[in-house]
Image (cartoon, rainbow, N blue to C red; front, side, top):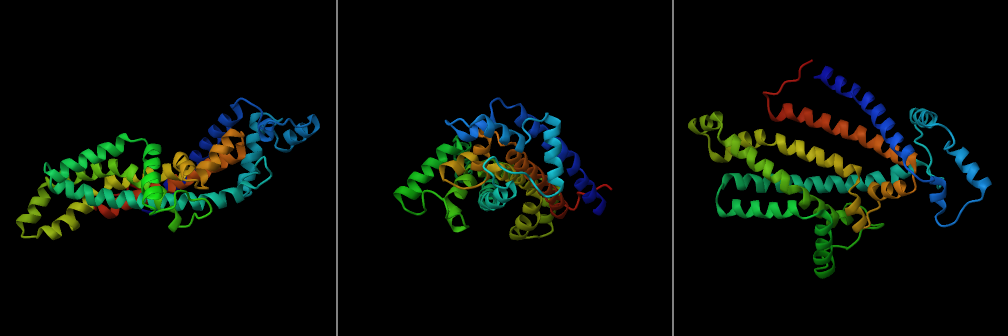
Length: 309
């Protein structure tokens, strides 16, 4: 197990180099002048433009710019935005906000998927199962921005259950409406995976053997069936968590969530290479670590899974 974990951690190094190199090249190749974009409609003086270009190494070749960035990363310095703010500070301010949103959304998705997917599987072909399949199909078909506007209008404006926007109130209690929106939009796929997995597990010989030995349904379903049916749902939820950490840009924009989605959107408009690449670098590392944790959970949920050294 330890050797497997070390091997997976070493895989972060080429992923880190490849991801940062690719993203930095894409930012470098973007058309337009980032210094001019910084000033908007106003044009900086030639002297100021030249000074800022030299300050951010924009007059250097691509490989030189990437080298400056890479050496800064190893010193713990992710660079400086064109507005003069440290990227470390920007990341420290925005990542916890999106992290809270992602954790709450995945929690809602996971709970709904397990409960509804299991009951649908146990009532396969009946009214509850058919109605839940139709509801899940509707949620899969609805774009997230449509669902967000509907939730904002009915749950916040009409019923006053939540605040319509987040803004500065971005603690756990202020994130419920965007988290519910994202969780419901994601749960449909996980619910169908859970339903199919439970149905497949119920048809296994060892489940019939457990019943033949006199085990009650209340023990077979939660202890044996659910435990072995969670792997596809956990895999899908881990993927969704990584996507949400990158930033649910549309949802954050609608609900005015000051997270990484909004920050990356504005950084892209201003061609802020250090901000974009640094955020992506952190997300790549988090994504790899999340998938490593998921791989470890596989062995706990299904003892038949073993890790080859």
